[in-house]
Image (cartoon, rainbow, N blue to C red; front, side):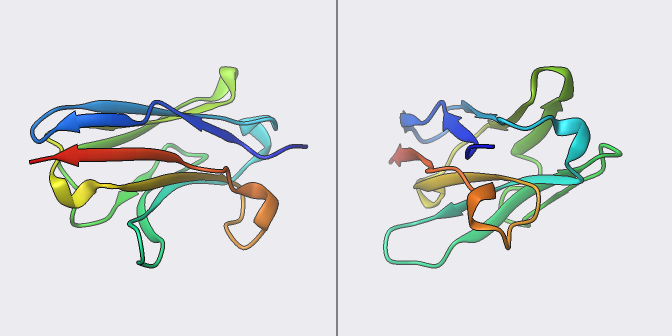
Length: 116
């Protein structure tokens, strides 16, 4: 019952793309809601996107139309495809699997840096 693990971050130029992955140690069939948050240095963590068991998704206004959240439930993996990246997207990106109020449902994060 370990934490999820994020991967796929890196350094990319503005306008580029990255795909983040979140590997869950728990079956996604048992989890109602999964999502991605991000935290720029010195700022609070903010919601990026989330998706529920019915495949209904929600996005922050700042990323809508550029980012896509998806699930491969059979492989216990959540993805965040980020297109047309902007410098303001620079942050540590975290996934949560299950209630975000439970600390152990959060991963350690993956760094995304977007250069001008």
